Amino acid sequence: MAWPLAARAQQTGKIPTVGVLWHAGSAEEEEPFFGALRAGFKDLGYIEGQNIRLEHRFPNEVPDRLKSMIAELVALNVDVFVSITPASYYAKDATGAIPHVFVMVPDPVGMKFVESLARPGGNATGLSILATGLTRKRLQFMHEAMPGLSSVGLLVNPMVVTSARASTVEAQAAAAEIGLPLRIFEAGSLDELEGAFDAISSTGIQGLIVAAGGLFYQGRAIIAKLAIAHRLPICVCRGRSWTLVVRSCPMDLAWLRSFDVRRPTSTGYSRAPNPLSSL
Image (tube, rainbow, N blue to C red; front, side):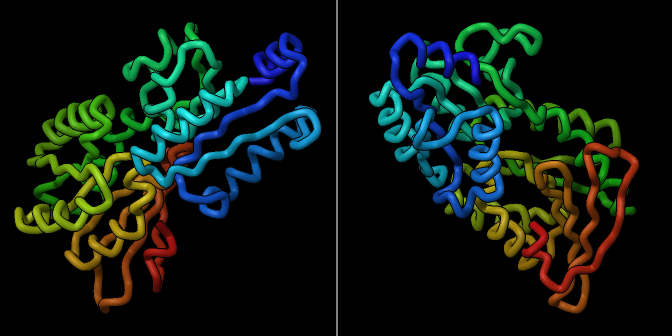
């Protein structure tokens, strides 16, 4: 990121401007990442207001706001885009001229952000959590943690077509290996989550894998409440770890089991009086 900033600044003689497209609705919601970004620039010698300008936008994952805010940043002729998924999907097509650094894109090659991981090409580069590649592990994790599990569902966001398709294909392959019936459910917005859980509950599904994605991160509290209300065990992605929430009695308790993706053999149980605080 530092190279295009310095190069464009030398060419234009102006303070370099970085347009940052977050996914939440405010800087407070983005902590500690918001502070980490500013600290990272400072470590590189870029002091906001002195030799760098940061243009932050907080769309709260509303598509119309994402599109309008990207248009604002293009009109400002920022030197670099930094985008956090799902804003990255919208920023990708905004311009082919402005350098673009994406964060947390599940499959940058499959989603056409880059030509390859070794040689990105084009105007984009960034970080990937390869989230679609972990769908198989989430299903295996739930099967291991819940002896007797006989049916499972996968919740995907159909608005992110490539990611939803990849998660579905991988989950179907993993379910076939284990011998578990798998059903796919969709929610394309926060308003659709309640209906999705009603449909899931009506089928008698015994466990639910929630695919990784910005929408489900944004709606994590809603998902947890709905899972508890429907007495439905769920496996959700929490950045570096997964958490399995299994309903138990009494009504205000749940079992949480965490799986650290950096240490595949580490698992542990904890009992939490407020499971929502852990999601």
